[in-house]
Length: 179
Ligand code: MN
Image 1: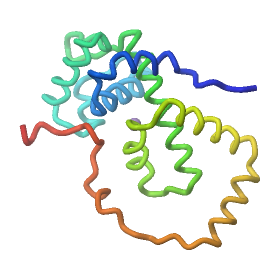
Image 2 (image 1 turned 90 degrees about the horizontal axis):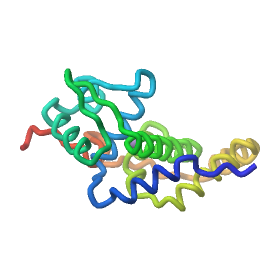
Image 3 (image 1 turned 45 degrees about the horizontal axis):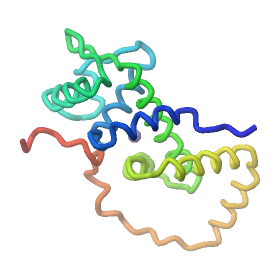
């Protein structure tokens, strides 16, 4: 009945690469994994567009990830994940989804994606596993969610504007414009 985090292997591989994998690299890997699920590959140009960065920045990053044996970089700008790249990518995507599901439950609305991106790079595996269990618990006990909604209605939440969200970009990903 207990579902363990599927991709602990991916986490272990991530730990091994921890010194070299920046949040930006994690974002690239996650996006490459997410986008190559269907066809098994992705083009550099597509990746640039998805991450909203210029092609030279993407190429530079792809070269770094290739040097770490996480990617195969073939001709014509086509990228494939290696086995370790896939394992790590799968973990990163699952981590993203777990954090996002939890925040959605709390009622985070328009900044859901931004908040998820800010949290995911810094969360420990232990906390992530707890969030995953909590998400499952809520799924199996919908009345808890209803009770929480009722309780929330009785509280006053200050609706402050978060100054860092408007022009937000993924933490690590920087465009080469200021290079
Ligand atoms: Mn993400």
